[in-house]
Image (cartoon, rainbow, N blue to C red; front, side, top):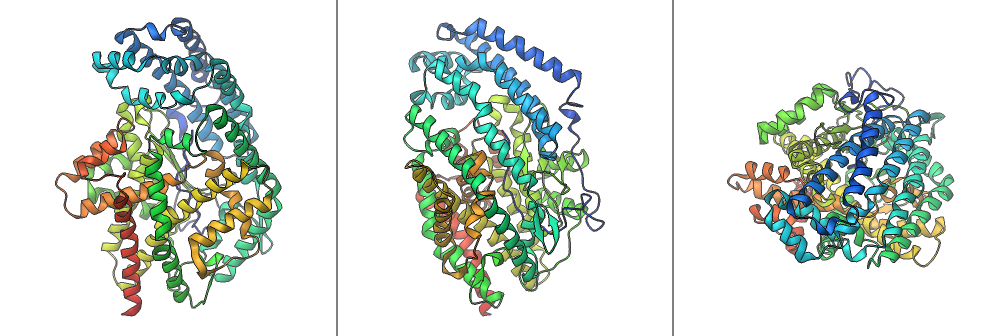
Length: 612
């Protein structure tokens, strides 16, 4: 599954220029040949044929027999299952990455759909695996794991699998849900993606893409920001019936499946997948909501003062400061800044990210049909990750690049864990990315030539953290309220709009006027469609990294080594085990206050600059 990590739309250059323009230099495009050379290459045919035979053989060898395996037999079962996951991951990575390069290309869309369908059909014989594993008694499975060191390595995988044991349905229903997925959520996801990618916006008579129009919201010209915001509102409002239909259908589908599984809340499946306790997420949510007044409310009042306004309009939220430097950062300059920042922490990290630039593992240019935002996709553990950004030369684009390369570092270091243990829960998946952003920010801040530059850097970082923490928790509240309301019946577009505006008023405070049409802006957020309740992972990651960075700044002995070992662990350890070497505990409510205090402290410094 693709992780559309931390999409940021704060960029400037016209999407009509796929090269990025002479000011940015040559922007790289993916070379996907490390996966496959072409959609019709012999290797894909070979791998599909192998999967067909292996899935059938696996089922013939083990269906109805898992409970009778000894330790060495169970190890062989898991290893064969892992090998199949690797081949499926390679095929779907290739199909998905090609698609996201141009979501409006019918051939690419068809190929991805065909591969999804083929993999769904081929994996039907594997549905028994999880079902039978969860029917094995705890004492029996624990005995097998305890008696075999190689099998014990997979215990975290088995534990996460068995977390769903109380919510497992009958074999027939599980197989039906598996087969039906390709025409259920996956189909609605594709409709959303293709609709979004195909939207165009009228900006002063010029037809622009979603990415380019969102980019206008950070333009230094306030009239351009207003034009962009109104163009977005007009198109989003026109398409609200479709987006409401997609949202209603996916929320209802989730409610039905959750009800059959007897999951206690709509969020429960996400918490189980993230291997995080509901009370930890609730503590995070409550800490952030309680901090709204001293974070977002206070900062935006300060920003209104800088802009000479009594109240901000919504199109002023991401406005640059009045003395913002409009100079574009070239691709080569961005590369040097990020590599130097990583190297200043540890040369090993710089050596990991350098090949991303040199080997076309990054797709950087803004092109028609390309997926908006940014993400890092781990592909499979015997191939490197691939990174997508829409680079337009703003400082925030440099920070986005640093963020996604952090994902790349994490995925690279965790690859030795293998297919089943490399992937981290979403709550931990943002650790290296946010830490990489912090390293880059701190390097730029230390080298700021004067107080004006320092102010711009601090303000930019505060805005990014507010977007990552406050805004994402507001998104989480929106989803919680939306799914609760959907449980009472179909929601009209106006009802969804009302829920959106409630959380916007709460999180942003009284310092904003909200233009007509802003109520429709929930409709373009892809996380609500692709990964319900994903968004709290951003706030979790930011709070975790702020606490980690505080330990680093305190001079914790051996911090770099412990940090790299944490990334190498991938998904093999619980967050409590990973944080213990740093003396941190996410279950302690004070843990989140420590991270929020870092943001508040930066706002304190900005206020002090204003008073000096």
